[in-house]
Image 1 (tube, rainbow, N blue to C red):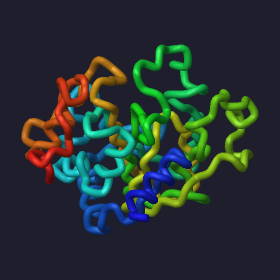
Image 2 (cartoon, one colour):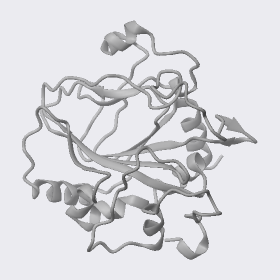
Image 3 (cartoon, rainbow, N blue to C red):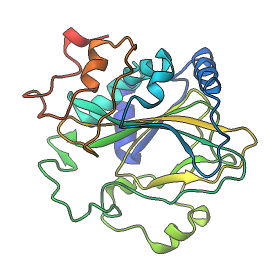
Image 4 (cartoon, rainbow, N blue to C red):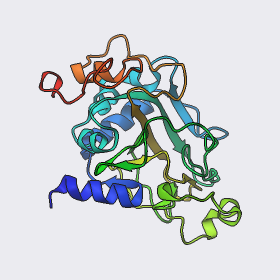
Length: 264
């Protein structure tokens, strides 16, 4: 079994993946240095920074943030979740200091989501031995996260549940053995489907949590009418240019990200 086949199986079963060492220590150091240069206010009432849609968000803080858009580690994994035609839907960063409380568990799609009664369109969970999934998040960890620290948490396999999140888990996820905080050292990429029941665990570590979230969706879907804009002075590859396109039918009005002409 190839590494990609293994990742595909685990992503299908768990609803998330942790890929360690996706970034080198030097790359992590560079991204943290560029964040330091922004002199952001200390994390407190908000956990987010550099959000977009509406402008380029943190992408305008340096080319290394742009380079993560189509990083060679994540593109094959996104491909078997989203197909050949997908786009960047939104981005934001998250930072937390010791003692900051947890966020609420949620899922943007599926039985727990607010869109439960919406028409699902032409996509179904599984068909013709292929996964069909509208949204995938890539979280780049710039500091260590995991048990005893906090950060990303989830209920593995919950993306396949047909039932709404029980109230007792919703109210006290820290007491439920079904909710886990996966180990993700600095340099890891956490990928998860938005159908997974997930959230943010309280931050217990003395060091600051830092993470960059890139959210991708199938080409003919959009979360909002607003759009992330590329930084005006960024050097975009052909593939990155496609990621910024407006929504459109795959292949007909939206090109493949994996044709030889745009391969990186």
